Image 1 (cartoon, rainbow, N blue to C red):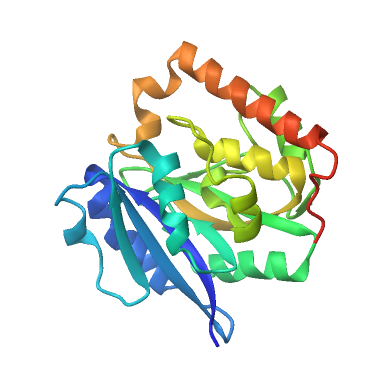
Image 2 (tube, rainbow, N blue to C red):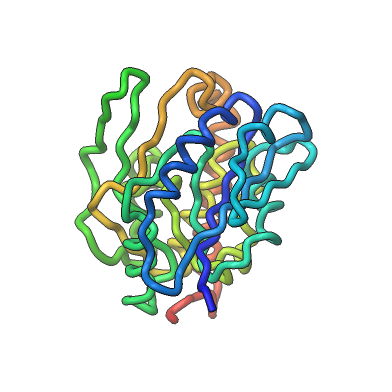
Length: 251
């Protein structure tokens, strides 16, 4: 019997050409014996522009739905995710070799850890990369530590939600990605941090592509009123989860 890691990718038309690079990065993953990945791709919309870029591989499934942005699109992909673990992979990003194996080891070697993240390098249009200068040390992240850092550093976390690897049962219990027009992955990260210890791997696990069509590069992403509302509800939800008796995941 093969154990499965479900890699979930939300995609819309402009990012579809980058699926080839994401697929190449999946092919470069070397997993322990008895493990494999499945790639669950969900289009944010119902067009003819994405499907031509979806590789032919029996481990890949493709779905569509009405336009609803990344949070709902990823959540709509969850019913097709059959793995014990879920890995986030944005359509325009790439995993580095060994990422899935390192994530898997972190959770299997530490049963009280429910989610893992890793170092990120921004991939710039000229092919150069830039790292983050405030990465935490490799190892466990105590429950609440990400929320405390994020809320006191202008809502910037010390770990990147685009690298999340998480137990599927915990992801489902938290309702998937937060119902927001953006920052939905930050909302999930803060919720996970509120209920469970995490893990950080210091070796680079993701190349985070910077390009003009990227949603986080659009002016709307940082528009003050909406941005403040997103940050407020992300924090309020996480603190409510942390305060609820019995909402701890220890194993």
